[in-house]
Image (cartoon, rainbow, N blue to C red):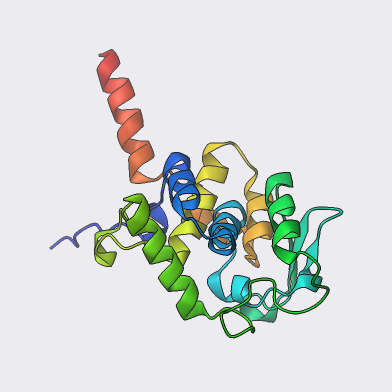
Length: 194
C-alpha cells in the first residue's frame, strides 16, 4: 500500500507580488516594517521579536541575530530600503527593543502572529497551505524568502547562512528541490511545446 504524497510546509510560499501586496497594504508603519523584515530577511518570529536597536547596523546594512535557534548568533544582510525604514522607526532612540509593543517592551510572538494574519486578511492574500485555513503565518514569510532566493539564483551556501542553518544540507533538503509550482510550470512549458 502506498503512502499518500504530502507536500512539506517548505513547499508552500507566497510569490514576490503577493508579499509586496501584504506589506504595502498595512497602514501602520511599525507593522509594515515588521512585515518587510520578515519578507526580506527570512528570520524567525522569535528572532524578530528579540531584536534590539543595538542589533541594527545601518552602516553596513545588517541585523545581528543574537538569539537564533540553537542559541547561535549570525548576521543577516538587509536592503537599503529596509535600512532606511528601520532608521526612521528607531528615530532618536538609542537603546531598547527594535519593535516596541504597546506596553513599551519587546513585541511578543503572539502579536507578530496577529499582525501577519490581519495583514493577509487586509490584503486578501491567503496561505496556499490548506492546513492553515488560508491564514498567513510568520513562518510562511521565511519559506517565501527562501523560495524567492532560490528562484533568483542565489547560492544555497549564502541562504543557509542567512537562515541560520548549521549545514547547507538542511537548506538543500528544505529548499534545494523545486516546489510543486515550479514543477507544474516546467510541465506546462514542456508539454505546451509538444
